[in-house]
Length: 259
Length: 263
Image (cartoon, rainbow over all chains, first blue to last red; front, side):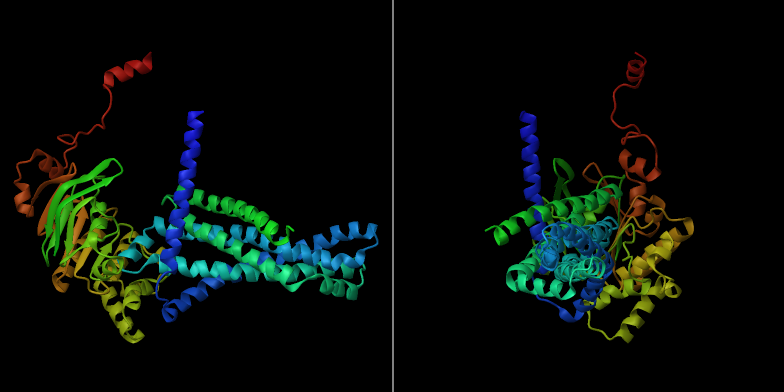
């Protein structure tokens, strides 16, 4: 019993210490005078690595999730003769929930794990230390561009995911199952609210982007500099970020749509 | 150039250095030798301000490193340089860009001048022809030489070498020994070499500190050290397997332990 309590205490202290270190890392990375001219190429590169290279998985997943939603939705809606509501069903599911959440989960697996492994390996090969000794702050040089790339790209990826998903829904619902095309779009237009649905979805996505990116960067920066340590850190990034996204999704959904 | 006084450093409960003092003279090659695991690299990190001592002062060029504010520390680091054991080249950049990195970060020189500076540094380490290679395409010795070119890119006043000879074949070892000495003499730098390769270090060092058991156990010029009366110093310099530093890690009685297994 006492042992269990001790373990719980140690785990809690460990988590709080981790949060503290993550905050310090973020503060160190973002605080200070920006140097746009020198930093610009670094940011462009990270936007490409984190954002553009994640596009394929986001496009394919978005398309298939939209198609599945339409297929599943149609069978239920058809029972009530409400096929014309397929557009809003697909759009609302994606905008409010699936777009931000699935993008965040895919992003954690695709870009988050890569960020952790990259930074962990830089640490293990003393690249971060040597940078520090050359009077170049690794937080500003390595962490900051990756942070902004993650935080800005992920909401954009979620929007692309939504758009492709809606097209996928159209492909299955209208082109295959024969729902009226005009009805698909007009019912969607009538039922989707810009602020309640689209903006709230973007806010969710921005929160998830922050969570996933910070977890990925922190786990890499804090990794034990051995091959085992890096593999552990990479796994932890995916697991912790995914659970955090799902947990925060519930909280945000409760606040935004809960009543 | 660097003056360490009464340095104490602990890692958790373990004392690494206990009230240790050392001086490194300007323009000289000073070596720190000692058995593995006594924290020689830690000492370089303390001088570089990457670690903070529990007590004592580390004065570099008039500034006490542990008390410096962040931006002051970064200013001090511009005057020093460190060659890491692994080389620590940036893997996503070519050799040329690696050497150009500190110049591009800290100066606003036009690219033509940067190119000239980089080629000069690469020529000094014999790697001008390898400028377009990536670090993964270099052998261990070449990587260390490329890292050396990067370390001297901004002509630092102090350069610290962390185990520069470890894992090198005799030829590249000879090359690095010659480079350390010639760079030190030609550029007037102060060099600190951490190593346990006795022969190589003794051949280039002006002054040597031998560190063991948390403190300096012997120091002097290589000639003085060879005459040192301490048995520990002699064991280390002559590479004897057993002596004041025992061959065996602390263990229970051998015969008794064998009998226990039998039972």
